[in-house]
Each structure stands twice: as C-alpha cells, then as structure tokens.
Length: 119
Image (cartoon, rainbow, N blue to C red; front, top):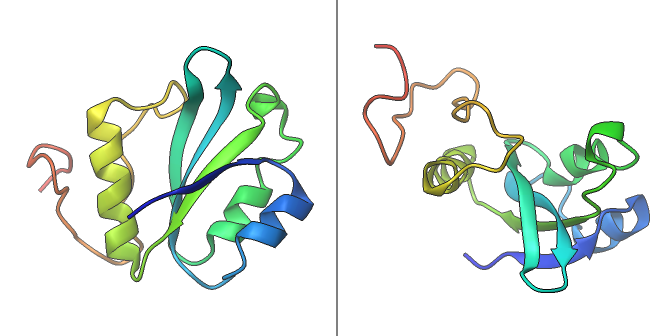
C-alpha cells in the first residue's frame, strides 16, 4: 500500500490528513534531507488509531529533530504488524531497537523470520 506523506508532524496536520481515527496504521517518523529526501528514524504502528499514536510524537523531546511523518492505513492489526515487521527487517530506523511486538492477545508469526519470538 502506498504511504501518504511526508506531512509536517503537527497536531493540526495529523487531524487533517489522518482522518480515520479508528483504523490500524503504520507510520514513519523522519525529516526531510535536501539530498536524500525523506529520511526516517522510526517505523511504528498502532493497532487501533494511527492518528492517536502520531500525536504522541508532537513536541516530544526525543523526536524534536524529526518533524515529518508518513502513514498508511491497514484493514487489520495483523496487516499493520506484518508491514511494520517487513520494514524492520529491511533495516530498522535508529530508534527501533527491538522487533515489533505482536498485536495484543495474538501469536502471529513474523512474516520475515521464524526466529523473532520465543516459542
């Protein structure tokens, strides 16, 4: 699925572009580099509301240099988890230290590797 953005990481912008507030989604937090374009520092997801999760990055000291985002809706938390996992395995952002957690109360396998979770 195509991602929307980059968009300025701002409360008003998030509400204007991430209009479905009850949809799972994945997102990138990043910045615009004049030579490289959009450079991300974090891939993430929310299984209930990407809108709500994105708001938590606005004015967050840890992400103050990273002022843009891209996002994509998914039909189910599983699809969002699988996308986040695929991106993580391609090369996680510097702020992604650990493999994405499974959605609550699930035992979905990682779509990329069988070695991600304890049996």
